[in-house]
Length: 158
Length: 280
Image 1 (spheres, rainbow over the protein chains, first blue to last red):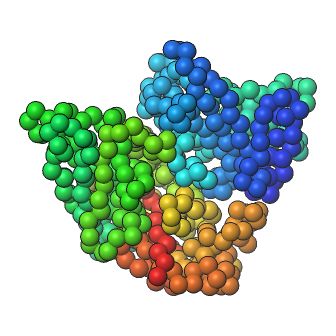
Image 2 (tube, rainbow over the protein chains, first blue to last red):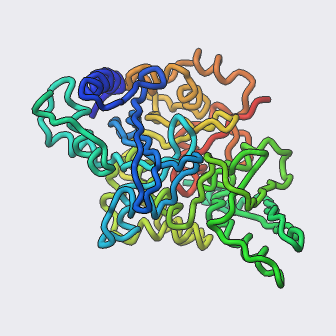
Image 3 (cartoon, one colour):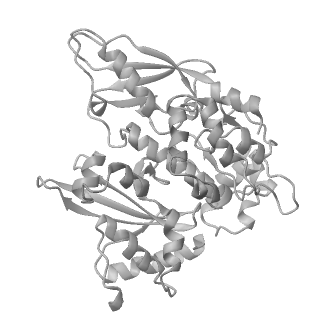
């Protein structure tokens, strides 16, 4: 559990630390979200943009990771390509199973569909990690960010 | 729960026209007219419209993944209940909702929602609503097939099957902790949602007007969510809701309606109360 004020404080520290490690997160919407984007290569050699946002979820009172992939034209990439080629989820996991943990939902600021990793288990997962002030989001991202291939600095060095 | 109200809410229909703009050599087929339940989604209705367009002899078959939908000049949201789209469309009561089916390259802010994706979003809504109401106690106690059954009854328009299951989500042992409510501020802006309680500290019921006022407060994002923030003050309600109507299921909801009544009787099948703000 994280209050919105705590989230904002953590988010500011998180962005500073990420920038010190040359990972380019930016605060947006008056410090309510942080955003990062970079290029990812598809198996056919095409490059697409991966856009990720950390946003406070006031229903679950936890941060939520939102992301999407766009072609050069700005068009979103098809869901099957996202699941199999970009997130590289093995065929052994069924589509139905993937969509119980990652699915599309309306982005709270942009109002268009983005993927989110369901936050309903976040509080429980975070309880099991030992956290000091200013490390909450970094630990959280080490759990959630790796599922979508986000770079995380070695926490030992922070 | 009031059986008559729930039945009326379920059976409420809106007229919808789908027009194909394909620019094909034979010209465009006749529009497809249909009456759709307010609780359903464009994601479920579009395949039927395409079947109708594709019935033409010699016509080019139009595939689901090659079209996008436009409404009033902007991409349509295929995952919002049709009743909510209708109430937001700024059309006269009972006039037809006109959806253009286009085969041009889709704009970046349109996303096709197929039935599988829609199902996943619906289930996420139900889980989120139950988290607000009971901290997920009901959905966690449900059997594996019970939630999919809710979705099936929406797809098949089966009121009895739906309520056999939905009763568990609505008639809970404890009072709702928070009320699942989404407010659509208009102008295609994203909906607002937060933790809104059912009662004030003095024990009186929070009204729909107060809940909407709280959700539309610009500061609701900047203040920490405390138990106080879900207890709206009457000043915020007055300043924000001045000369605005609250619409749900095509009817104007009086400000003083207890929020808990709306939650039990006016929720869409996704278990959220959906309120559209209309300027007078």
